[in-house]
Structure formats: structure tokens, C-alpha cells
Length: 217
Image 1: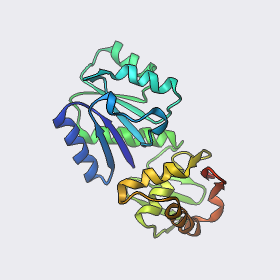
Image 2: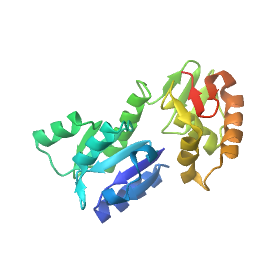
Image 3: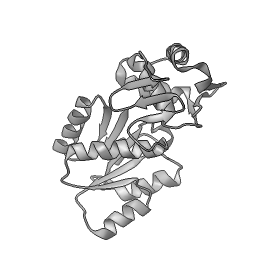
Image 4: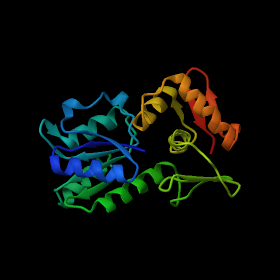
């Protein structure tokens, strides 16, 4: 999992990165809207967004992203606790709203809940027929038997399973795996994908030629 943090507070930003690192979650921390990539280049699994940023309002950024078709889950983090602010955030396209100060454990739980909803799953154990995935414990089972997956194979599987039935471009997968080490080229992605297919069944992952891969739920 890769999280994009947009937060100008130095202590909170550093603390969130450390907490995510302990959970085995990679992250990128940016403090200004000007530092953000173009909407089409946002490849994070989830965004943690502060509403008060040095060079603009997080609410305006949220609105622009949603108008541009950015569908990544977004959780607002803010000290504003008024009902009007919460309603504006949620109705404006946010998936959740957390008021500062908050416990990091609760925030991480909310991230997992949002990602679970996007994957259309009802519990911490994601079920796709006889395949079960446990994102938090980095475990997977096929027909009740534990699978031996490398970190890259597991993250590839998770990246596809989060969007069942949606074609995920090969370049997006390469970027999502980059936090695990050196950036991957397309050839490396294909090798890891081949190994993953062999372990979970080739029919579960369809190649869309010239674009990427689709996970068959």
C-alpha cells in the first residue's frame, strides 16, 4: 500500500510517515499544492488531505481532483470540527473525515476501511472465490492453503484486487511497487506477474494488450 500525505505540519507529517512505516505502508509526504503531481499522475492507493495548506485550500483541491475524474480514496484531516465543514468535505468528494487531534491507529483503521469499500469487500479478509487475501497481515490463501508470495507478488496482487474488473495500466503497477525498492521496468513487472499467475491461477488475471492487467473477481 502507498499513501500520499498532503499536510504542512512538520510534526504530524513526520509522525504519520513513521506510523505508516511501522505498519509496512510506504508513503509520500508533500506540504504544498504546488508540489503535487498532475491529477493523471496520482498513483497512491489513498490520499490523506489537510484542508489548510500554505498555498491553497484542500477543499478546492479535492473539488478539482474529482472534476478531473480522480477516483483515488481521499480522507480529509483537519482541525475544523463544525458540521458544515464535515458535510462540505464529504459531499465534496471525500471518502472520510477525521478531526485533529486523532489517534494514528484510528486513522490507519479508517484507511483500511476505505480501501475495503473500494475493493467491494465486507471484512478484513478479502474473498474472491477460493482466493482469500488479508492485506493487514500480508497473507493469502488459495483453497484454504497458505500461498508463498514474495513482497512484490503480494503487492501486485493487492494492487489489482483493490480494483476488481478494472484495467490497471502496467506503468501504474510499476510505480506502486517502486516504494519496495528500485523502480521497476515493464519487463520486471511481467516477470513478477507471471510468477503471481502461476501461484493464484492464470485465469484470475487477464492481460489487456498494450495497456495492463485486469483482476477477475
